[in-house]
Length: 125
Image (cartoon, rainbow, N blue to C red; front, side):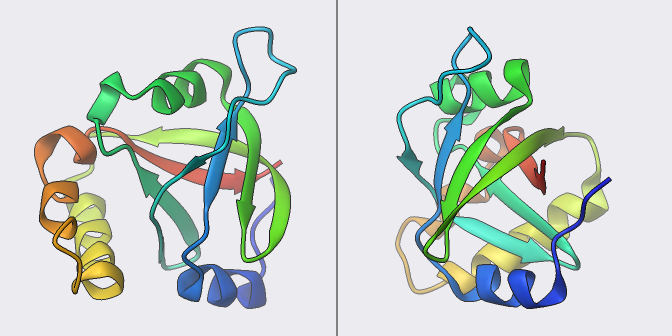
């Protein structure tokens, strides 16, 4: 299983340009890029859907489990792994959102149950 390099994770932690494109239902056509917030916790990259599990990109990511992201000026082929039910990890991801986006009025809604339930780890393909 591939992992992100330390250097790549450091760049991801500072970058604020993630666009997520899970495959459509055909499993080969990339979805329309959607700009979302991303955070790094430990050696893992995470994103959350603002509209929770109703978000179309989240539904595609969960069903297709693969696609592409644009982050830190580059495209990456990726796999998606939903994260649910891990209270300790959710707390760490919440803290990372507060640290990275704390000055935004939108950070508090990202810490609510809906977006928390739509957290996805992004792994290199």
